[in-house]
Image 1: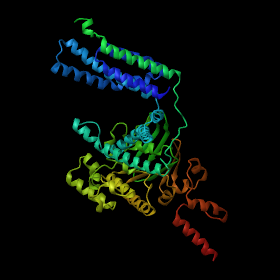
Image 2: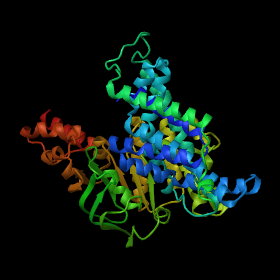
Image 3: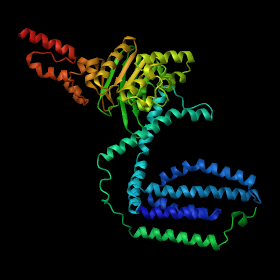
Image 4: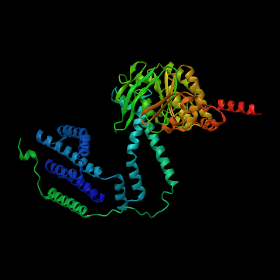
Amino acid sequence: MDPRAKFLYVCVLFAVTVMFNQLIPLFILFFIQIPFVIVARVEKEWLRSMKGSALFAVIIFIMNLLSLYLYGAYASIASILERSLAMTVRFIVLVESFSVFFLTTSPDLLGLALEQSRVPYELCFAFTTAVRFVPVLAEEAQTIMDAQKARGLELEGGNFVKRIRNYIPILIPLIVNAIRRSLELAETMESRAWGANKKRTNLYVLKAKRKDYYLIIVCLFILAVSVYASMFVQIPSITQIVPI
Amino acid sequence: MIKVEEVYFTYPNGIEALKDVSLEIRDGEFVAIMGQNGAGKTTLVKHINGLLKPTRGRVLVDDIDTTKVSVATLAKKVGYVFQNADHQLFSETVEEEVSFALRNFGYEENAVKERVEWALNLLDLIEYRNVSPFMLSGGERKRVALASVLAWNPRIVILDEPTIGQDSQQKERLRQFIIQLNRQEKTVIIVTHDIEFVAECQPRIVLMTQGRVVAEGEARKILTDCDLVNQASVVLPEIAQIFLKLRNFGFRTDIIDVYEAGRILLERLGDQT
């Protein structure tokens, strides 16, 4: 699919998610994305990203719960719980839509989409290169960890502050090497005439197909319905439907 | 004593890097592990200081199973100098860098000072003690990395590709230095592609290919065996290549050392004149 259509989908989902703070529409937003995950056949990866965000979701829930309980003007514990849960689901929906996008779009395609959306090529290149170097940095971080462990560094154990301090010998070489690598990359690219031709053409030109237009229509429909609902429809909360 | 017993190792991505590797390295030995890229050399030595644990089989260092102890505990016995010094340098000064491991091991402040001084003198770095390691040249950074490991005087020293990025003078210094370490009864293990360096040092060779040890023995024997080195995608040392070509003139073919080669050739020339 055209990455631009998928990008529109992410933007719409983002806007709609922020539009609502009631639990029911947020749940609907969560469930309407699941068919996309199944169609894209990225269930496993999607589940992994959901699991990865679980810890943050719990933190968001607890923080909301505490702050609403202490400072919010809510009538009952049930409504506080509902509100905190809604904020957590909002976060999950955002992660869900972003993961659907990133799991189905390669960095190169994303770069191409940016480029053909008239974003300056230098910026597109910087973005795709940054994404492409993530696995390299991860591997390097492992090597650095090994090198420091071989000099007696124990990463585990100790209190919170000590644990953070333990990572200084890993972060500094990692950052220094990343900077050194980026400077080297700039030099090697310039020496291979990068940027010599101001007017660039692409081997692959993105062209929206019928299914891309369908997705765009679905997105616009979701956006229109959401704008209407948020302005003119009184959305009930669960505590109103099921009085506790 | 290091014992590697029928070790298999598979990386999480499924690559089987070691297959049924068995090896014994006695105390005070000097061993070079050689082979093509991806042969499993670095994977093997990472088992010796416990950075990697075997998927099957076991590795014993002084009868201690490496799976039973932490890397930090093994590091006291096994010093490992990584290929790229930039993977470990992080301190503000060379002195602090060299003292990093000593502090991790809980040495007292006086002992730390004494050992740092000793290691800096040993590697000719004393003039840089207050300089940032990032300001040094590649060769000097490599020496700082080496000093930071030798500072705690480990009994076993592993050097991963020690000659990369070193000029010939530094290589010669490194050779002298390794011989000196070996004379102090330290076990020295080097992982290298540098066949000429190995031919000059003449350690025991362990030749690896595709995760297996295909041969081990004296440098003179292994590095002059054309079939064997070809199998491991290693090129014969230049001296060995010359003497192989001179075989028909009655020369021995087990020569790898420049000085020995020179002596033999001079003797022959002397006979002819």
